Image 1 (tube, one colour):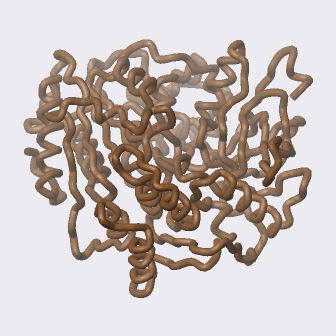
Image 2 (cartoon, helix red, strand yellow; image 1 turned 180 degrees about the vertical axis):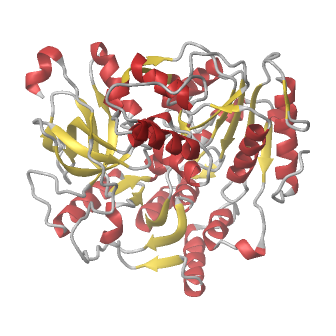
Image 3 (cartoon, rainbow, N blue to C red; image 1 turned 120 degrees about the horizontal axis):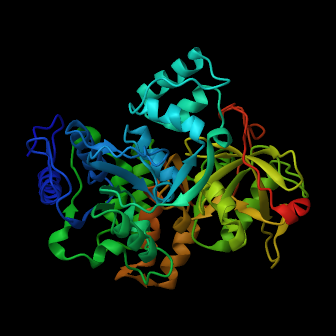
Length: 512
């Protein structure tokens, strides 16, 4: 095994060697740092383990070793037309939030969508991209000074992002990206984090693109909807499933992970688990036995619930205590993207929106109305270029009412639900520093006695919910809401102006 600067557990070391052997079959020798042209397909392998088993550390170390060996990292934001013949790696996650978690750890991750669909650059600005990537001479471009190009080069040297570098030169995405197209050429090596969220269609898409694919996933999470409780990596032969167990390090003791792993005990009942949480909260401030929902946290970290009715009640309570108007959104209200309502003939517009991070499940903060009726200015949490203005359909659901209240409604565009509370299922792939879990919903699931994939549903719900907490877990046991300590805010978000991502719909334009 390669001499590593970090100390692996035994099963991490075995997994590192197994992935290395898989890549060696494809011509990438990590032991000697030798790269050969593609020489056949290695296929798919999965690294699976519960929270705290070291999947992310292993992924990061494999990436560093591949990069050190000379493998080119494909970011999804620009690819040179000049074929270098080098071996390549793409690191993917299902959502912007999941990708941003990896980026914060120094791993250049992007979304699956940004790999499936690639940007088309204006030819003039493509020359700058080629120069930044080391494939051309310093170009002369009207309107860009040498100082602006120097800023772009300095940014790219540090961040390896072509759009970010061009933004540093004073350009917007709409200046240099003319559209998006479905990827035609296959890539090489793909690492996919949060693979428990993949459905069968996404898995097939990825296998078409990557002849060498490594999935990193948690078998204890909730399976994708309509997957019958199964995850795509469970279909792989047993030798291709590398199982990691929890890394026990006393100095890194984590009470949240202790609670998550306690759920594996088949004899543990809901009441016993709650007593465990209460006792943990008495001795460790990272776990809180909450008597009410903390409303201040809901604007950035939604309350996690199981029942849809609970979600709707909490959202309306959040809006009431903040004095949000009945007929409009207030600046700073959180939203969750629920998909895109666009006809097939506007496929390019759909790609434009999705490429900017407006994909199903994206967490968004409302910044205010756009310049056109039906448009909203939005901050997409976790996106590399987070601020966007887009045609929006915002739905505020009301208790005991079948039809939602719609404060903003373009004829077509991105659809949003309120994001002060979300279902545990939709929270998968996201993490927050502090996470609130609405325990009465978990109790309701326990009383129903439902079982999913051989495990009580309440345990799966509790596991997913509490492992969304990075630093602090609040286990809310009463149906109460605190008062806000101040108004909703947007000043903590990036202050750059929202990019002009418009949806000119030709004959429908006047209806937006």
